Length: 441
Image (cartoon, rainbow, N blue to C red; front, side, top):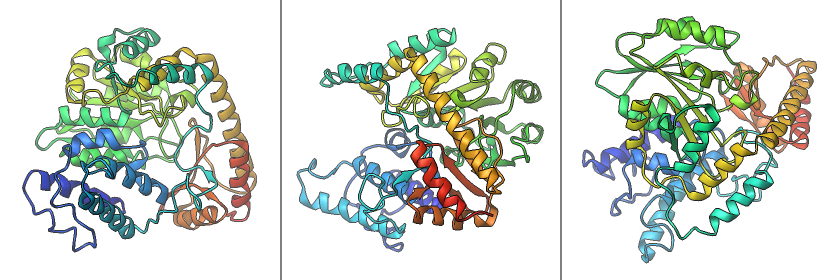
């Protein structure tokens, strides 16, 4: 399904460029076509607007596919009711249904609909709603929704700069950190360029790198986490960028300061290193990346408000880097893509650090409780520094995930490798443990 989705998106870009007929391959695959309707944005821009979560490209569950389909339809010019054309609306409905059929995705698999999983542990979301101060900020900002947002995200950039002791020109803000990664790949792309990353890791890396024209280099993880020596050895004169997810998604393992410094010393300064710290709040050393910035001009730190901050639905992420690179990235980010509601919520969440830390402690305690229970059941579960656990089940991954789904628990399988399980509420986690007990090794 991953390869199919990637092919579909690349084909849409080729259609927009006039390189292929819009009907050339869609109809052969059983898809209904929107050949008579022009797409509203270039694919590179639409990715930045419509990706609903950093986990999208992995197509972790059928629910993720459903979410993608809904967002994709909303990104087209003939959104139902908006075009004034019943024919356009019917065409979009047909495409939505055709792609859903092709991917085996029915309308009843969305987690918010009847028939969806009772316990959603596949997306690495926090189970906590935004805190009261954040909800107040959202309400105040929503009252002025008739106004366009601040295109420079000035207040949020200033707040982030103060938080990290940096100048605002070292902060880029976008609609989720994945849109900023897309922009970064765009500004660093060159003929024959390569990007290297550990594997398995966040699967959006490969999709976005492919779309930007990079040659991708996977470096297998070591048994206990990133193989930083092998990753450094994979860098050659063609490598423009190294992507390092720390803590790593999906394994939850993290490299410490000593190992990272040795790795950064081994990578040429001409090669950029992006440290993706989406889950850093759950790590033992949450301030690691920001500390390293001052002495490493080729280092970029990516963080998000989607995970520990609980603002996944508002889409806010940021980069910390050298001013020159930040300026180049900002020029590639679609203007007005971060709403004032999202900006206000992020500023308030930064200020509500006490509440955030309390929720992180609760999640970490639940994560460790679940891990201890799994170990007692005979599962191999490496220590995690994120809000999820990794079960290296190998060939049993899909079977185990299916058994969990039958018990109403949605987890993320990586076929042939393992299963990732988000830490949810105590009720969610107990439901998962009950399913795991009946499917122990």
